[in-house]
Structure formats: structure tokens, C-alpha cells
Length: 201
Image (cartoon, rainbow, N blue to C red):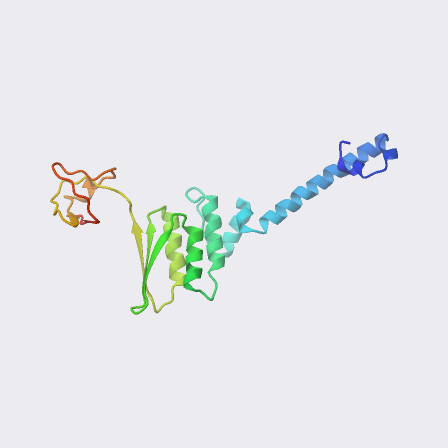
């Protein structure tokens, strides 16, 4: 049998040309209805919505997306974060919302006595960094001091003075001397340390 409608009919109809043509037409229409139904179901959820419906949802949150720099996946995650930021907000809830935006993880340093919190993120695209700042500024209470830091994972080559010990302070001659490299090399001496402080002049 070539179509599912014919399979449900008695065998007497299987050899009729009119019945074959009619059931094939009905079968095609049923398949089109199922495809449309599946599309409607997908558009109900942010994670499966098409770009057209993502754009409609963004308009509801006054989000001006830039498709040339922002991926559709990030735009979906941003919408989920916006919808998730509803009261009441707990520390665990803040972490859950941030995990929808940040794939590389983050650190939070909370000082309850001083009412201060510091979030440290790996440096990433500007659009993601902007959304992280916007989300935290909306979620963190006004009575808490919020600090946000970006962590840059890199090693440097610099022509500068080095104070050898458990802490190394590097003073580059100018900011252009800082270059992305694989290792920290010194002409005659190398020391593995726990902390490196870079102070551009």
C-alpha cells in the first residue's frame, strides 16, 4: 500500500482507481497537517523555536538582537534567562540563570557580613558579557555591592623587571608589549609562581 488511508479501508477498495486517487490525496493532506502541527508545537518553546518566532519573543522583552554577531543559540539562552528572572530570587536561582548564559562556568565570592558579592567569568564575546551584566544588575538586590570581573587566561612575553619569589610583578613598557603567547619565558631565569600581577604603564 502506498498510503496510510488505503491501509485502513477494506480490501475491496484496494483495486479501485478512484479509491487510490482519493486516499492518496487525503494521505498527503494528513501528512501536511502533521508537519504543520509539529511546527506549531516547536514554536511554543524557546529551545525549538525558529528564528522568526525568536525575533517576535525578543520584541516582547525590548531586545534588539544583532544576527550578524549573535548566534541563534545565544539568543535562545538570553530569552530563557530573561523569562527565568522572576521573584523570588535565591542564590541557587541566580546560579541556574547564569548557567543558561555561560557555558564555561563562573565563580562567586560572597561576603555576607559586608553585603558584597563578586562574580568572576571567563572573558567571552561582548554580547554575552553585556547580557551577564544586565542579568546580574537586575537580579542582585540593591543593598548588596555587586562586582563583576572577567578572567583572561593567557601567558605573556614582556621586556621588563621581574621580582622573583612567591609573587611576580610584571611592569610592561607599554600596553602594546602584552602579547598572547603559550609560555612565560625569561632570558636567563624562570620561576613557577602562584600569582602574576600585570601593571601596564
